Image (cartoon, rainbow, N blue to C red; front, top):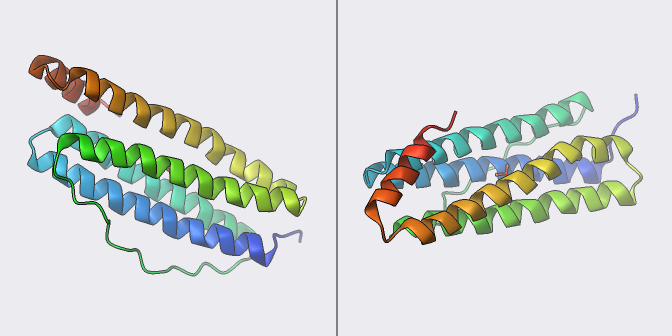
Length: 164
Ligand code: FEO
């Protein structure tokens, strides 16, 4: 059976950990917003955390499909200590940029190895990162525009709470 190299398998195994860390990070943020009684923001980050678990599972399944061992590693506690509402939104933007760079690194290796199956598999994640970066940047921008007007902020919170 055609499979993937050990190097690609290791990068993907590391990415499982990075996605699980993302889930932890967003869960911590969701709890911060919940405590601040911004229930829409909390729901947004709850959903983000759920999506990250799905991303981890997609990477895990890919290793399984290729007969590679999955080695789950410790997931670090989130490094963020949020003080203000804006903090989580800014961290989200920076974190998604970091995740994009990690996925790009796997793609670089897949291109180097002429590993077409991994390139095809990663395309979904590359598209997803375009979405994640754009949504997180837009959320930060909207917060900066609306934060001085409580009614606009309440509307944004309501809108975020509608996320399916
Ligand atoms: Fe799995 Fe938010 O990237």
